[in-house]
Length: 53
Image (cartoon, rainbow, N blue to C red; front, top):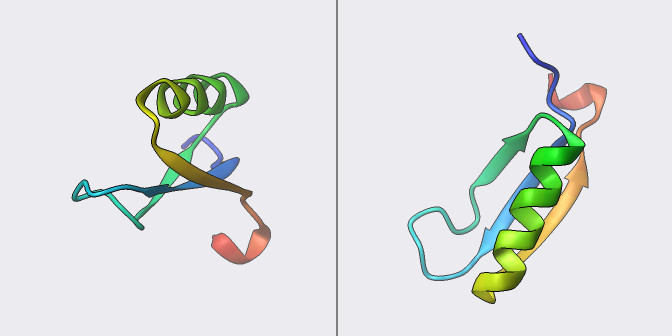
């Protein structure tokens, strides 16, 4: 099973708002960050820790 590297929280009016989304690679994080910027959606990112397991 891939290791979770980051958790991304989305802040908008969608059903996904506030739900932490697991991100498994730096490339996925870059794509998600770029897509959010293009859509004008605010997100926050935090690195996964051992406590998340």
